Amino acid sequence: MKNLMILGGCLGFVGGSLIGWMNQDEVFILLTKACLATCIGGWLLRWWGQLWLNSLKVAVQEELQQRDAEPIQETTKPSESEDT
Image (cartoon, rainbow, N blue to C red):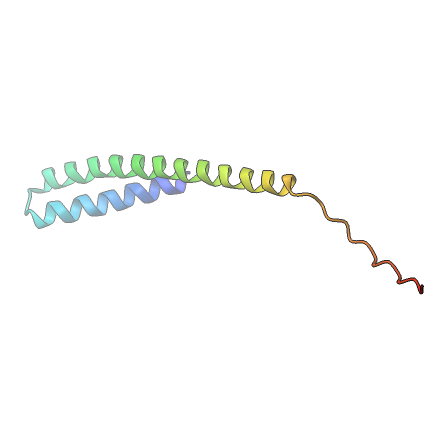
């Protein structure tokens, strides 16, 4: 989870810096926007990561329940044919 938050922060900082640079903002305003974008990006990627992990856990639990619900088919030897 830490890695996703760091990645989101980095992406937010780069994105905020690029947008500020393209708007030709002053350096102080550019860094302020980049810092805010860092916080927002980190929180958003953390939130998305938690949603993804929760849905993954649910999918695994459903798969396990489905496997448990299936009847176990025993492999039996075919009966030898009797001559009649």
